[in-house]
Image (cartoon, rainbow, N blue to C red; front, side):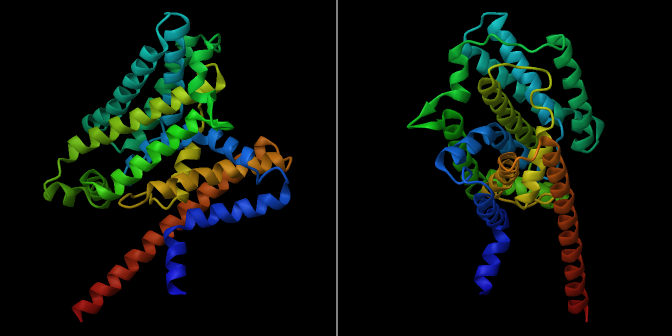
Length: 327
């Protein structure tokens, strides 16, 4: 019994995911079908891919709220390169990802120069990205993308609802799970989140690690933007606005603390899927988007409260152990 409880605690996001699936399977006959499950994965593929990068930032002790408008501006840039500059699609993809990587490095650079927490830097950058995106699009949607552009987000393989975006999401999920659990890079990320000063004393190049984490996050953000733009078939300055809330909530539901230092990529995937399942299930149940906002916000508040409660409980337990040793 103790092993089952321990397993449930370590994989709470997956337990909740299964529980939600069971509930919605009773509310809608169309929910628990292969087509609908694959559609949910496809709809959330760009979010989950972006989550891989944001999860690294949160595991290392930071918070990034710029990912939504960073994805929007990357999608806009890629669409403009193809439609107005006539650039080959592959080259436009590579340039867009490179720009997103630079955005990730920029966030780290400003964090180092201004000596401010990343969350404050990201809020400022988010507003800057938003303004630039609206300026270069003149507040208009960029359409007219060729069919070959849409293959990344809409192209299917083996099954009519299994897209390349879902395959890419799964492949990178496996890679990132391995990296975070089996390599020194993953250990360094957790060390930064656990205690940055101790990590520096242990010989970890903290500044370099933060740049690498920022660049990796930028890569996944850019890839997510390409998949979103490809799936929608158009780009606008507000296409991915609000994505950061879904990602952050999903990562927290997945068990990553706001202080960093722990977490699993697989659990973060489950956390984001929970948000996607809630949206899908509520739509099938006939509830409109406004109720989804209420649900997501409420879950985020609940998870942050629970995380703070856990941190406080661990601190009290640590103090009791110190007192017991002192006696």
